[in-house]
Image (cartoon, rainbow over all chains, first blue to last red; front, side, top):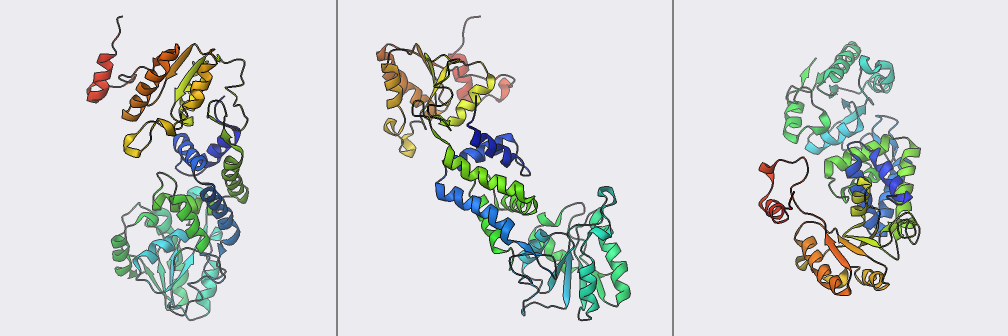
Length: 198
Length: 198
């Protein structure tokens, strides 16, 4: 004797989302229940759409609804400079400062022995293929400034430098132990500006 | 140049929900993007379902997927005691303690001159109809202990008492487990005013 079954189920599904406890999930469910029908329909459609229409770019692995993604097929971007990041959301963080004019490569993770993630689970092969084409002048390693990210950067630096490509690492400036996703614009700016060859 | 359009739209739709800022909406959107297809489908279906299948009980206005609701058609509940609340979620709050065995009446709001909500906008007529049937022994006013809720309780008390029905108001005072030092003046005033001999 409490909520109607469809409402209970919505609360349950909302609780599966990160950072939503029982109280927040209940508040959201009641909001959706009260909201205009069109708003709920739009939200439901957006959830389905994002699963149906968003895929990964076959060149850089970034999320996209076209293939190649808008960065990889852009003539306005410097296709000779690749910024390597761990996750697609890191691309948004770097784009927000509006300064970087190159392209990206998304590894889809970082080396983490603790979580059993080795280099083989990352999208490194595609990066090597791009560099092998001989037109890349610089690879900027913009993995997270934490243990996994630094390990990944070190691994990539050792792997890529013998190929004769300039390899740089974003500068100290992004606070150690944090996540790129939450870096403020200025920190991100300093980090890009202060990048050094490794 | 940032997110693919379907992802941007999902972030926008999520931001319409209460308590979700741009960062949380983005985090949730990325989680949904990464989640298994079935989980996203279940969430989208739950959102549509809650709008399609949940309605209001024609007797008490509580949310329900059957009409009358499970409370109003239950033979295990005391149909002679009505607990009056502002919103459907208040029913869940009272049910959680598992002590109240009567039924409910949901007003769908509270009197608020500031927001232009008068008694006419509340579901009071149905309550009067139920009392007019002559089988109600007590009406418990469980509206919120704030200005709007108190105004509504006072209005209902004046309206219902002449009908010969017993009208009670839930106790307002210092909450269990709290520290008197942090009680606000109004709560303290109500706690003193409502003191009982022990």
